Image 1 (tube, rainbow, N blue to C red):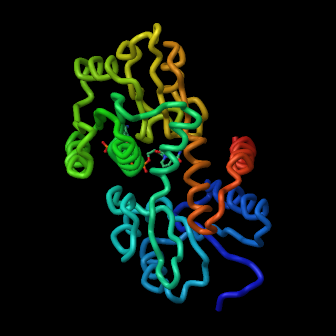
Image 2 (image 1 turned 90 degrees about the vertical axis):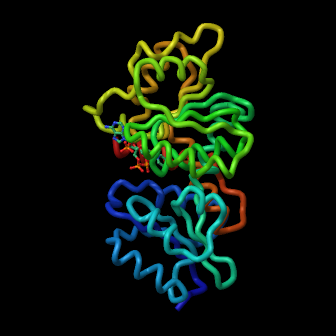
Length: 291
Ligand SMILES: NC(=O)c1ccc[n+]([C@@H]2O[C@H](COP(=O)([O-])OP(=O)(O)OC[C@H]3O[C@@H](n4cnc5c(N)ncnc54)[C@H](OP(=O)(O)O)[C@@H]3O)[C@@H](O)[C@H]2O)c1
């Protein structure tokens, strides 16, 4: 039974030990004077599917979905936004009357961070995205929606990169999408031409991860620094960003995207502008506490 004393939100995923969302979202609700709790629900795939089947009886006001359930949500939810359908992953679910709508706020998070913090307008630019998983699909969708001139997708599994390019090309006529293998010749040429290089792989999160780019592939910035944008937020500076910084390019890590994807979710749930600066402060505090 829904109560009128407080609102209830949550996040479904597994494992959830690392989630930074509850602190960030509860601070945002407090800031706009709404009494709300945000609870982590660590559930198996089977349990999550049961939740989705019983949405009319769910006592939550909205929720987030994270690894590994985002794709299952996209396959199951009847109502979805265009970006959730295209990306094939739902990370936010909100109510609209009696309907539950699935969306993907990573797209908006990626774009807002790129524009506001990265001060990079994608329109007409040459971009490279490393990776072809869920985060890469959100990034490529965002860049194509902003009318980038081209997006080159590089992935260890080339077939997956090709599929991404083929899925999105029919949706975006102004952006040329292509997949290339991660070899010396192609990477040198591609990185030379690019104005933006995005790491949307998970490489760089762990200490002994392999190098994603060879340092010799990255040209010195000279008068035309590129923007290197890593979606990873822990550690704050990955090897990918360190190498770019040493060559004097501009860098942006994944913290801002994390804030803005959360801010967009908050806006879907409340219809109110999210207190972004405060959400960022909370997130940075939590990241500091968790090393
Ligand atoms: N800042 C944010 O708000 C935000 C939001 C979403 C995600 N992210 C970050 O984005 C990253 C990717 O997430 P995801 O959901 O897209 O994961 P995913 O769907 O599992 O995709 C992982 C990607 O990394 C590649 N990869 C993994 N290990 C590799 C290796 N050893 N060498 C080369 N490539 C490797 C995979 O290549 P294959 O296809 O060849 O396996 C794939 O392209 C994560 O670090 C996540 O934290 C950040």
